Length: 100
Image (cartoon, rainbow, N blue to C red; front, side, top):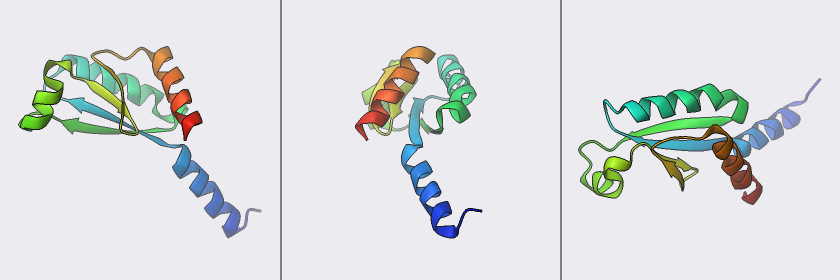
């Protein structure tokens, strides 16, 4: 039986290990759709939370990312753009978690 203190500690550890993967995207972007599907397929395995930010109509984001979408960040750090290589993503995510 796990007491409430153990349960709370487990929840805190989970919060720390879960990374937020941000996808800067555009509406109607085929590459964005493929990238998000790939990330969703790895979400549970890698314990990640996926956040979508649409750059359409945001002049600063459009200037920053333009035609590079999808742009992928891991906890706010730039990872890659256009396509996601699953093995490279896993490796970068593991390195990111080691630095935390």
